[in-house]
Length: 290
Length: 281
Image (cartoon, rainbow over the protein chains, first blue to last red):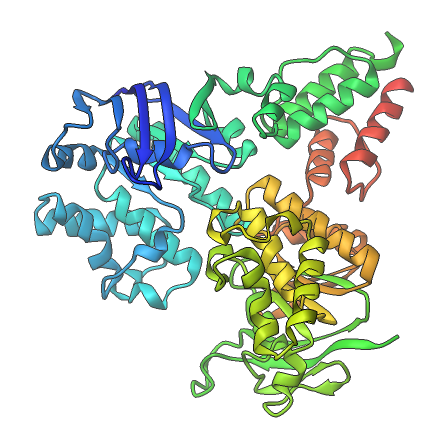
């Protein structure tokens, strides 16, 4: 399911003294099946953009296309329901939204709400609770008796149980420890591959964008300023710095190395493995002997 | 040197009535001297947050003692001890009470009955220390995450604490915000010699501390300088902790037959070694 924003603008509290233009002239295409990362400094408009991806916000100007559905300023609320079934959003700190008596009920809530039969909703919930690596017996517990990391997993299971075609992740690992972070990010990647989902990751972590995404959208001051594969986006650190963004640690290390060794800038190393391979290849060439 | 904090065989369980209950903190001891920066690291559930709550008297241990500024912490001296500590928590949005930045920093001073004139001076001084003095009349909710945490630190500093406790204060921030906050703390330590305990799972942050305490399963797993602690390498990874970038890269380079000095922890040192190795080839 392709998602496209065409000349989208959004103004908060339009027509009041508090009106604030959060987005203007946004033209973004998210190809079906891609793993797209949206990056941008705090206040760049990425959170507002995210809320357009499933009709939580309707554009003040322009069109948002989600598959075959168009969303404009005129679109009625009930026309948005099918979109919400197809596009699942994991918000920041999703565990704050848990509310049911048991984990099972909480995870079933979304599917039931979208008309899935009780039995099927239960089967799905149990499947996702297990898939998220939650210990046996978690389904019957109160979500509020779980640890923070487990609550996060329950909340994510609740979104996945709706089996969306598009999964939008807003800083899904904020506040988790490194091991938990990696587990969750690897799980999303696995699902992305296996289920042929479109995944959209809103992140501050350039490392995650570089490692997982195949497409990137850079937001700055309310509009899109660059779109392309991570190799291209991270090739030019000076350009990113102008938008108050950095490059992944691997790339800054690579540039430092190249500078001191008197080498031209190579293609950016997007993962630590790529960086090690790049350095080894340079050593194999004979390094300083050349 | 003066002992700021002293934990002796501290044990704490959230379920004291359950004979099989797990101890969240299980026999932990360590001391902290004035002017030290100690990083307490550990994965979620390792006991580090419970440890923080014990240090500030939000919880009291069932066994052992928590000593602060030379005395054991008790219900009776709690407020007096706490008035000498500043605390900054994880979520920058949960810590604001004032409508403007300066009101917010003034809040605790007002509660402590500091006269108006001195209050004004302290508020401005504290905001200056965190480089937020040009934001006096801004609304806290419109600041970036890093700015919010700097204001929260200013709120703590205005009370002139002897000990600053940061409980995952950088974990919700973007990379710039994290850097801003860390730079402010480094700068404060340099100029004022403030004692700092930071509870964190950011090992790059822990690298900057004087001493690192690693928690696992409620126990102290390791303690030492960052150098000593991180040399444990895979033992830390096994606990779900992440080694600093330079160490991870060194180990990947080792697999490629490029051998750097063990225990190289900073990127600068690693790249310098690589330049040398390269030119000697």
